[in-house]
Length: 136
Image (cartoon, rainbow, N blue to C red):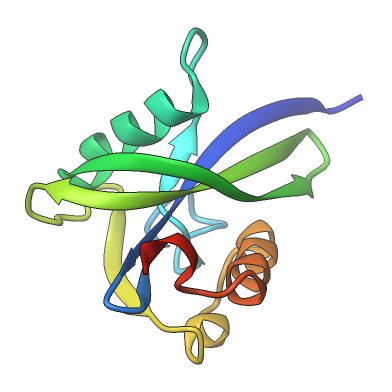
């Protein structure tokens, strides 16, 4: 049985658009877009992990809001369970560290980006659940 890796992602919505970022590594994922986030470390809650990842990878502080959607993606050696949470930008200058680009995508453009497979599922969930949801 493949190892299950827990991952968190942010639905950081601002002015009716959500933040996505383009991977620069590893080579097989470079150029693919994703919702920002990362792996949950041992002893962390998903919310703590998401706040830490956003500070480490983008230099911003966020308030993690309610759970919004999840997705599973299976590979040969492991599986990923991604939990997405709504997030609010509190402070800091957005600077991509682990990514080479960021974009703000609206409900009409989000699916035009070359998203990672698990992130496609999250994008559909975000659009289906009312893109603006709790941010209104």
